[in-house]
Image (cartoon, rainbow, N blue to C red):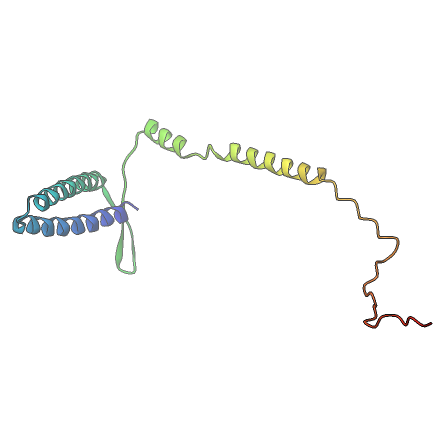
Length: 149
């Protein structure tokens, strides 16, 4: 993993150095004071990022390189560091999953609470059926009733 991190840092350094060169050329050719100030701020930010990445690459490069095996003619490179017993114990204690028990307890409480809530819900009582069904059609005559009869 350290080799991958180092390769990623080197790729980022290449990208930032190309950006820095472009901004340096833009600064040299700019005529406007505002543009020059903006390019100077950008160059300062890029210099800070490049410096930080160079420091990170140097700290990763300090780890010794160990060739653990050769796979298909390509050596597998591993950067390792030696720890004292106390340092190793600190690293192992820091990597233990201390969060697992509180998470499981919270999940159990949520499950029990949700189950109790679901069981406590009372179903709605069924509505009684109407005694007489309402008429769906009403028949009326458009002709008035006969008055002589």
